[in-house]
Structures are given as structure tokens and as C-alpha cells.
Amino acid sequence: MPKTAREWLEKATFTTDDLKSPGGGYLSPAQTRAFLREAIDYSKLLSEARYEDSDSPRFEVPRISFNSRVLRKGTEGQRLADADRAEPQTGLVTLNTVLLRGEIPITDEALEDNIERERLADTIMQMVAEAVSRDLEELALKGDTNRTATEDQYLDLLDGVIKQLQVGLPAAQKIDATTITSYQDLFYRMQTALPARYRRDESRLRFYVPVKHRDGYVNELRARGTSLGDNATIRGLQAELAFGGIPIRELPMLSGTDTINNASVDYGKFAFLIDPQNLIVGFQRRVRVERWRDPREGVTSFVISLRVDFKLAIPSYGVLAYNINL
Image 1 (cartoon, rainbow, N blue to C red):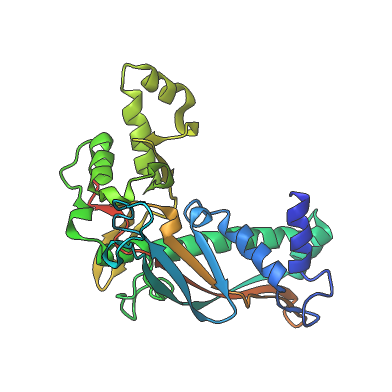
Image 2 (image 1 turned 60 degrees about the vertical axis):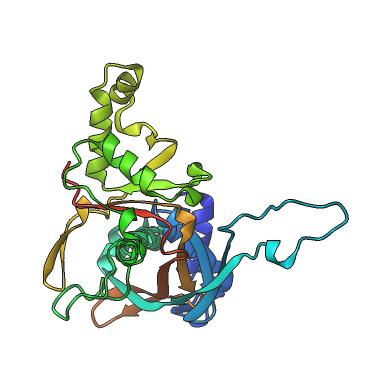
């Protein structure tokens, strides 16, 4: 494990006096930022998103954009007329963080017998950060508050990216891919469906796809009798994939079948195109991490609680493809 990770993990696992109680408690602001950064860095989606935090569970962040012409015909020595001045479109995005908790019990024997000995607690915290990243990405992708009381209540906490795109995008930016028979056609349809005002710098955009569709695109490239096909065959899945200058990112959590309001949903049939900076990941700074031992059971529990929300700053900035049957 890198030294820097060891250093903050030692604090997160209470080998210093920085925390409020012997067993742990709220992390300091610096520790909170380190823990959250470490957690989201494991996720390809969240690591590229816009990160915001606040002392309050509910807070607002500003958004600003210019969607109209700024320049006008000028006259020497004269200011522009009032009608010719460009006003930015401004607004606030409200983040309502929801409470998440996790508990990981480890037996005394496991702590005593493990080869890492006292360092095992640090390793556990590293694994906790990875698990938190995975679970946050799942909620960010699959969250949908339309779930009934008998369905997954973790994913019922808030609306994630897919739900927000389903609700916020114009019809022309939601592509039914049922009849699409190639990945080149799929990505082309998605790229051209995005309004021109959002395509001024396409290097900022990302195609986010299930792993199987990333693999499928690589296989499609292999079939070409060109240097590109040869490169895809030789470098395989280690190649940096892109289409039309837009990088392609695979999301392992974009998979599996779930039930929402008694309807089956296959997340392996979705893909979306967004600027990841349009996704705001909001945390309340009061992250609590505790290490608590119950001598009656001979178990030490690592307990974490945090508050988070995910919002698209501009709901119409993106493209969603669904029913992908490739």
C-alpha cells in the first residue's frame, strides 16, 4: 500500500489522537476529504465527476452557462446597447444528502492470526474505501425512488444518473437501440443526438457503457482488416478506446437485472453520454468512522456513516441509449 494511503488510513483507523473519542468518531475536515477522495477514486464515473461538500446535509451549489451569442457588432467609443449584452444563465442545484451506514465485523482471531497483525486494520480500511466506492457508484447509477417497499431499499434512497437522464432529457436525446446492430452505429447515434452547444469540446465528454459492450466494441474493431483491427487484437482490452474523439469508459456496476415498481430493468442494456463534470457528487463533511470492540462476542466492528447525493447540474446535458441488444 502506498505510504500516503497508509498515513491517512492510520488516522482513519484511530492510531492518532485526532478523533473525538477513544473508539473513533467524526473525521477531521482533512481526514474527511482524504477518505472521500480515496473512496471515489476507485470509481471511473465518480472520479471524473464534480465533487462538492458542505457542513449541512442539504446545500446548494451554483451553476452558470452561456447558451446564446456573446459577441455583437461594436462601435468605437460606445458601449453595447442593453439588448446586446449577454446574460449568463444561472441557477442553483440543490443537494439533499441521504444517510448511508455500513458495519464490518471482524473476529479477534482474524485480527490476531492474520500475517499483517496490527497492520490488518489499515488494510481493512483500504478495503472499506474500495467497497464504499463500489456501493456509491451503484447508487449513483441505479438509484430510483419509484421502487416499492418490497424492492431494494438502498437503491430507493435517491434518483441516480439513469433515472435523471430518463426524466430530464428531451425525447430526441433518448435513443431506443432495439434495432441498432453495430457499436459504431450506436455511438454515432448517441454522439449526433447531443445538441451542438454541448459539443464544442468533445474531449470533455465520455461514453459510459457496461463492460460487455466495451468488450463488444473491441471485438467489432478486431474484425476490421486494418491497422486499427490489428491493434485491437494485439492490445485487446488494454487499449484506450474512443469513438469520434470521445473516450469510452466501462462501468462494472452498469450490469445486472433489478425490479423497479414491479417492472424488470436490465442495466446491461443502458449506455449514456455525458460530460462527467455535469454530474455533481455532494457529500456532507461530517463523516463518521468508528472502530468498536464487543468483548462479549470477541468481535471488532468497523462502522462508517456518511451522507451523499448525486445531481446532474444541467438535466438536458447528455444522451441515454436503452434496449441495447448487441
